Length: 400
Image (cartoon, rainbow, N blue to C red):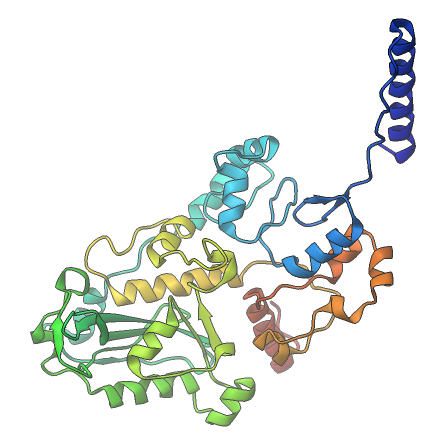
């Protein structure tokens, strides 16, 4: 409805109220003309003042990279927020109905028909990985090598590696986490490295009900220094340390869940711009500060259950890699502003809003303000674009 129509209806209502009041001998009450509302083009919040909308856009970090409803196109901070919008206690009516008929409860996409949605769901729901015991027994033949390490081959062009560690307890209160087992898989879900790790300090609780470990597993375990060297060899991929810290070069991305904890237990560090942590990735988080468990994320977005009993590091690493690849495969439209890649990695780039004068922002429409907005995290879809760009530079005739 146009401003003219709004004003017309308000005036008409005022005339009618005045007429009735004159007949009854009562003074007519003044009718308030509805004020113009400024609506956010991303989350649809409305504000009475334009400067309030501009402040909202500056601080909300809306972008095309946020999860979006396939019906009303509302942008949400996380997939958890999108799920609540579609299926929560107070879902949006039409959106909820369309999602129930044509939506996928794993990737949250909505399709053109229920048949298309059913076909997609079959492929979207992934089977659980093979247990690591099966992999190790196949590689060891008929011999029992439960305490030995496994060194597999990794393709030179493998861009990412997922890691998971199992911790035993140390200290007088058994609360100190000590890495006793580590597993790495490549982006094709091949086992690259597995080892039992010699504890860096005395073990006071093997946490067998979760880790499945006993003192026997760690009798011939690999020294921590050797484990560190092997992991560095896989991650650095022959690249010198200085270049890894600056722009990564040939170094591989490290994928995992709560990687800071795993790296700390191994006595390792790795550049932040090469970490892909499913516990810290905003679209997968429960709130801005609270993470979901890997078990929840796997069940909710991949469709199978892990960690039902003893934790399998191979299963956990593959689940983290699958979550990363699912987020990486999202297709988002390119933003209009070119962003320096190093700054985008470190999230230290200047807000585009700071480059504009307030007078210019006041003249912009909500859609134009949204086009200026940028996320405060690096979307993983950019990893796939980087890989495609590298491939096209190497093989300009190749198709992707």
